[in-house]
Image (spheres, one colour):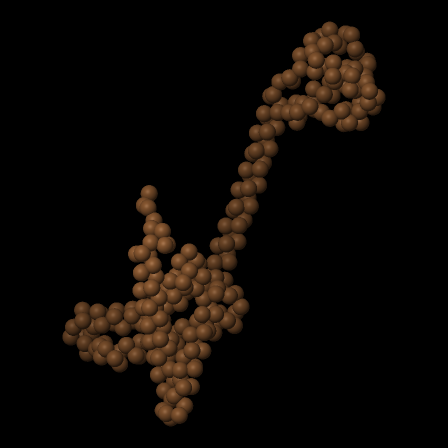
Length: 258
């Protein structure tokens, strides 16, 4: 079993800072490319591009809460698609990587590598920052702010699986309960009556009396439940007097009928 480092070790603390700084840079880069994507040419209104880029990012953060609200989910999907598209455009522009049809014909390997860099880096810059920053702030919270989990949680694609899992779990619990009950019943039925009674002499002596009825019912109750029957229940079932029930059961437990 691998030993995990404590969250308070220097390595983990430095790693959290590094992840947070790197994710913040990627986050800012994504917002910048999103603002460029609006292509606002009038300098006085350039701030609108950044504001809209922030709105796209906020939509992604809201999406990453895993909301099942269909509007939030759809807007979040469009925000990620738009952010991903502008990231690709920005990377192609600033890195100047060739992915033209001519390159695919002349140098397939180079074109494939360039494509993986552009599309892969675009996805990383768009998807990673939110979950990375949250990990840097709350390393023990791994299920909040995750794009993949939020994608399936809001789409309802995992609903059928969850319902099936819940049904299986419920059936398993029911089956386990039934097995336990049957096992308990068999155990109780096979458990011997703990008090010694010479039944042949006892029946000859008390046949037709409340004493026989009380002891027989006490034995029946024990075989069914595996414990002594409360005096109150014996009185109700045998119609005998409470004082007589107490006296008979006490005598039985003391071995006077053995």
